[in-house]
Figure 1 (cartoon, rainbow, N blue to C red):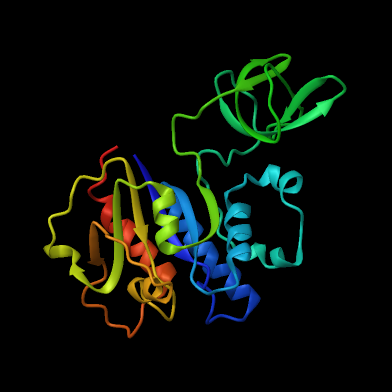
Figure 2: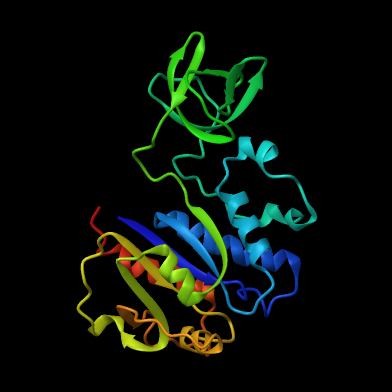
Length: 258
């Protein structure tokens, strides 16, 4: 089972302060990591911040020791210091290497040999082939050697900037269960929730428009499996997208079985 969340490229349309913009995106990244979201989709909703949102989310997801190699420092990252750390299993700290340990790394070529920077004092010799960022297992500590591996625990999220409308983005994700969040939806407390199996998607609107209005803007329709109000009896006039993401994922985490 994998969880997906869908957020609009207009997420920041009411926020002009660059520090707050960075912080708001950071709240979504943090919520995604807390609840094990594996895919974050940024869909077209008339906004202009898709690339910025993707950059911030990918910066957060990248282990700190790999950021310099993988993500060039730009003005958009000026306020990256306000981003909360994820502290997920793939964000390892330095320490003594252990055989069997899984770490993220980036390929470094030295002549005809491949090495990997896995966040330790020394580069690790790579057994096998590859390029760019990869996941490795330590197979020897003296000398330090690694081989490509697949993690067995939560290993961060992938960010997809589709530049497609919401309906097209949902179809691309190939979901088994699509859940829309809306203040006008059914009270989540009164719904018999189905088993969360396969690819499960949670869809969120923008600060100014709900999901149905966004679909109408593109003359589209989509048959959601559920349209839910996940914050019944809210006492504020509006709920921010990042707040809705956290609240919704927290509810469904109670019934998640994997």
